[in-house]
Amino acid sequence: MPPSAPTVSSMASMATLTGLLRRSHRHGAATTRAARRTMTGAQGLHQQGPTTWSRCRSTLAAPLQRTDVDALGQQGLATGQERDADWDSAKPFDEIPGPKPLPVLGNMWRFVVGDLAKVPTSDLQRRFLNDYGTIMKLCGLPGRKDLVFVFDAEAAEKVLRNEGIWPIRIGLESLGYMRSLTPEKFEDAWGLVSTQGKEWASFRTAVNQTMMQPRNAKLYVGVIDKVSQELIDRMRFVRDPQNVMPDDFYNELSKWALESITYIALDRRLGCLDNNLKPDSEAQQIITAVHTIFDCLFWLDVQPSLWKVVRTPTFYRMKRTMNWFYGKVFGFIEEAMDRLKAMTPEERESHEYSVLERLLLRNDNPRIAVTMALDMVTAGVDTTSNTSATVMYELAKNPDKQRKLQQELDRVLPDPREPVTASKLEELRYLRACIKEAMRVSPIIVGNQRMAVKDLVLCGYQIPKGTDVLCVHSEMVKEEQYFPRAREFIPERWLPEGDHLKALHPFASMPFGFGPRTCVGRRFAQLEMETFLAKAFRNFNIGWKGPPLKKELKLLYSVASPLKFECVDRV
Ligand code: HEM
Image (tube, rainbow, N blue to C red; front, side):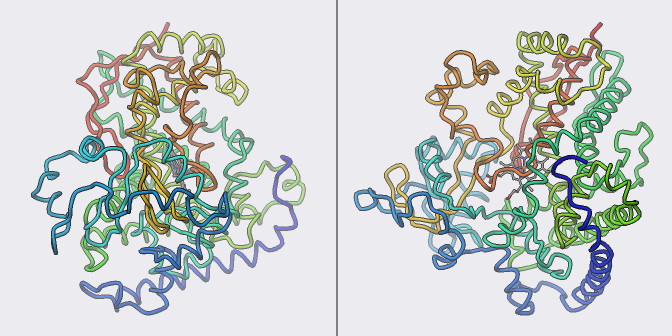
């Protein structure tokens, strides 16, 4: 048994937990049916019962008032001071530049018919930086609080270092709200993505060790290697006679990411990379559900949407998909619990516990495993597949860097079909530098957002506590002052040799976030990407046969044109 394996004594409570989970699921289905019967047409949030609404408010924490901020975020402030020392000499909040809202219409019209209507979402941040400078304020959008954008690494450092011990990151409110509609399914386990304060902290504490310990991730290297080998085999199967990938190659990458993360979250192989995957197969249905949820989150939470006032068709689509998905995940977790219960004491002694089993055994509440699995599958597909596509693209466009990587790979993995192991991965320093550099040159997130939990001075302006601040790393990474030759792909800047690393500002590129709220799936994401990319560049010389790759900003910066990789077998 690995040193941190859960104690066998916690098996005693498994029978009770299974009963509890089954009861809550049946009750959940009944409540959902009842909710469907009573919630007809375009009801606003305020028309629902007080319990649901109060739960919803505390779950979403939006919009937070100053007093809520005190309750949620004041704990553990680095300095203990309420306000930055230079507050009195700073310019007032109202003077922060930004598009001026019109009376009644606010700023919404700009995005519909005004000066910003034709700006692609992926260019908006650059436009804001050019028009207003290193700090700007966007206000006057219906249902949204004012948002301050900072494009300055010093300011980002100040925001993130003063986030408190329960950092507040408002976003994806629709996800939290949907969960609040069936509280019996999520009671005491609302997940990480859209919760704040105590609810977020108790969940994070319950899952943190299992998710973040490097040795837990390493347990999966064998399976991730197998899944990655399946993708390599599939690449050989789907490429055309000129060795070029089909236009929908991104779909293959997202199947690989889903196959990997569902194994980690649910102890389950789905068979996503099967050459004969049927359109009505379980795997294909799950792939579709994950993409639907991601798409709906974009339309409900990023695009201007009236779902907080009127139930939109997208709202219902998301609700239907989430209920279906919950049922699926729930079924897988019940199976895992049954397997655990059936184990003999001897088997338990020698068993290598999976992430799912650890989550079930460490916590008295099986809903934690269910919600964590939902969050993992929701957050763990488009993130790793888009990032892997970016790394492949940058290396295809920079053949000298690709050759250097292949020299490292040939040394560490002399046989291209040889399985990747944890110790071999440790030796792949240049590969890690390539991934870091691709995440800098073309990050998938706009930036990191926090609510200020004390009065801050940023770029010379007063930022009262309770203000949401977005640190726009996706633009900082393009600035020469932070990264010399910023537009070039130079993995060497992340290697410890030389002075490059010392010169970099640590808060300019932060692809996995920061502090106690940092990406909880980081270890698994790194393991998946390193394993697949090591195998891909060991097996193929990868070129690019298309026009420059387009990205669009949806929930993430995502691939928006065909991935025309030429993958020629290396002899
Ligand atoms: C390349 C891949 C990935 C990137 C770049 C990425 C990036 C991020 C970022 C920037 C955050 C916000 C951190 C903050 O606010 O400080 C985050 C949060 C999160 N990520 Fe990832 N992520 C990736 C993969 C994954 C995977 C594979 C999973 C699933 C295991 C995952 C699950 C989550 C969850 C649940 C959160 C919310 C954490 C919390 O609020 O406590 N991510 N991720």
